[in-house]
Amino acid sequence: MKKVIGLTGTLGAGKNVVKDFLVRRFNSYHVSLSSIIMAEVEKKRMNFNRKALQELGNDLRKRYGTHILAMLAIEYLQRDKELIIVDGIRNPGEIDFLKKKFGNGFVLIAVDAPPEQRFEKLKKRGSERDPKTWEEFVEMDERDKGKGEPDYGQQVDRCLSRADFTVMNDGTVEQLENKVNEIMNKIIS
Image 1: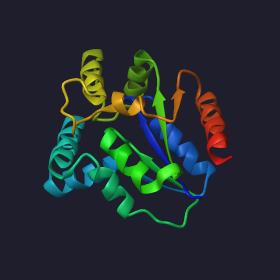
Image 2: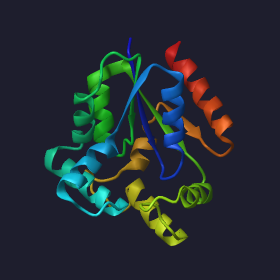
Image 3: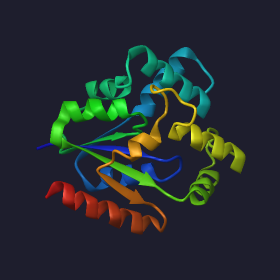
């Protein structure tokens, strides 16, 4: 049976490292829910900051349902791979859609790390969209987790609570990859 791995996690926790590891290890296809939002941002010639992405994602979920990003992502998936990775799940409606669509073939993995480590990783990454100060980080992190957000908004905390597996990324990249490898061995067996 084909497996669909959903990835959710806190801001700067290491979802990309997990995704890259899975892509390297398996014959897989990867789709990011945020790439759908970015395509919309480009079409509308909007500013490309994190807040604009969050607002547009919220708007799409409000207008078309909380499942819309997952539904659009699945429409474009290649079907010839043993593993499909859906990255950037931030709303429980996306989880519900994927569970309904793939049943037991869908597994949600959450990635988390201590806030101070996440902030340091984001500073090192140096993306324009990443927070520059601790205060900015806390504000973005709280919003991402769902504080002050409507049901159709960012709800990462609610997604984390529904994960089948949670990986704490509080060590080296090698340690993170070993943890993910252990999880994947359980999923595949």
